[in-house]
Length: 83
Image (cartoon, rainbow, N blue to C red; front, top):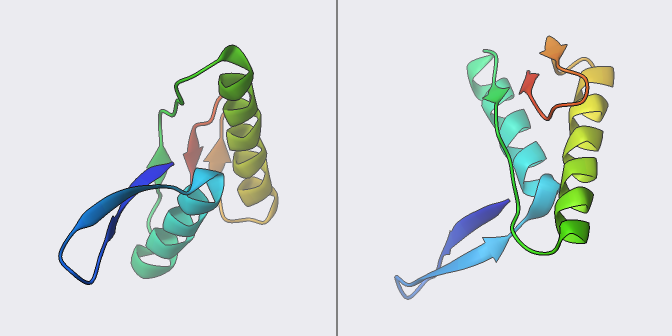
């Protein structure tokens, strides 16, 4: 996942946080709102190897959250999730 970091001087920079960043956001929103969170699409640019790794990492996150009971549903084979 790419996100924006806000710097002390008022500037911004783009930061790559991978699936760890998405996991942190999903968990934070779930705890805060106690409502389903839907992650409906994801992608990464670059060589096919990078895109396949991103898909594998994303699916791993979906299944990990689901197995921990965070998710109420997951669509196998697709990084779609409701926490």
